[in-house]
Amino acid sequence: MSHVRVAARVSGFGTSIFAEISALALECGAVNLGQGFPDFAGPAWVKQAAAEAIAADMNQYAPYQGLPRLREAIAATWRAQGWREPDPAHEVTVTSGATEALFAAMQALIDPGDEVIVFEPFYDAYVPDITMAGGAPRLVRLHPPAPGAPAWRFDPDELRAAFGPRTRLLLLNTPHNPTGKVFSRAELELIAALCIEHDVLVVTDEVYDQLVFDGARHLPIATLPGMWERTLTINSTGKTFSVTGWKIGYAVGPAWLNQALRSAHQWVTFATATPLQVAAAAALESALTNGYYAQFRAEYARRYQVLRAILDSAGLPTLPTEGSYFIMVDISRTGFGSDAEFCRWLTREVGVAAIPPSAFYADPASAPLLARFCFAKRLETLQAAGERLGRLGA
Ligand code: PMP
Ligand code: GLN
Image (cartoon, rainbow, N blue to C red; front, side, top):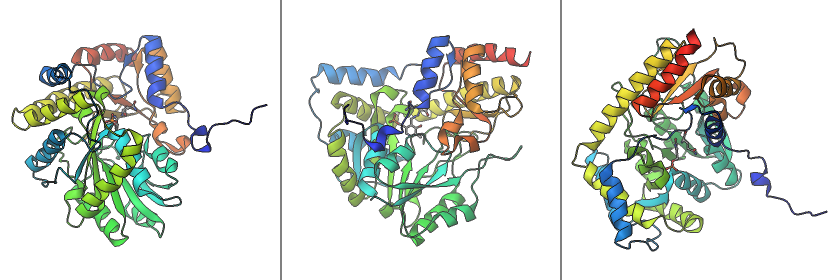
């Protein structure tokens, strides 16, 4: 009998909910509004830049911290938004998606036994990222808005109580997946004040920073007074340019945090796909002047309105989304006892796939009864889902 076994740190991990629901959607021929990825092509000029970089033989390892041209384009993007002018040499690092940046950041900044404050529900990778680094998540609930209220909220006292002697870091996500919450200036100021008071670092995942609606404004916590020195801001070009398979992510922050991140990153992937970095640089450079972001937001605002109307009229009341490309709906009146059961039934029997948000809670049984739908889809796809969902009310 062999005593060979896998490491304890991974032995409890199942398959991610995104892989499970996408496979089920494929098997059932369902319209997939589950996993968050666009079903339309990224801009032709972005794809062209990648094709040209490959043809021009930019196919060997890139510098481990990222191509200088891409780091400069990221710095220019920050400057153009009035946030700050990071030094591309020391304050910007390119990673293989936000996913790698998050993993490497936790490896770089957490020691065993350290506590990390995370808002729950949380993007599914966060807790494994923390525990694989030996840290312990300390969860603070986001509460769904009461009917008519504009946004999910947290209780300031619950947040205050989460800070203790072992707190090393707070992991933030705004705009937030899966709730669609965009943290307000007042909320960010409270978080910042507590992090400064307790000398806690912030890693903030802002991959949906260009996707805000209905007058909401995205504010990077790193731009608040006293926060730059303790904050690493993570982003990804996958969402913004509709090329999620490219996995070009990046981190911006003070040199000492980038240095730490690079120390871990060099042993995770070393470097990131060179021609796709060239294309990401071209995309960010062009978007500074060609009006891309305004058009991108307008198209998404339309998709959001279309899907929201479809869901509401199918008897699935929507919660407000301020940012991201997700809508949460209330399923408490569908008769299902769990969101996972509802989402599997909806995928199999109605032919529309959605994600059960209980996958974003440490104790799935404690999750409110909701389902998450993605609107990063062609209008035809949303209409096809609408036709199927229309039968729900019948
Ligand atoms: N963070 C959040 C909040 C996300 O929703 C996602 C993916 N959709 C990621 C990180 C991962 O980004 P990437 O594909 O660049 O690794
Ligand atoms: N972030 C995407 C979502 O929330 C999925 C990414 C993944 O499959 N890991 O749906």
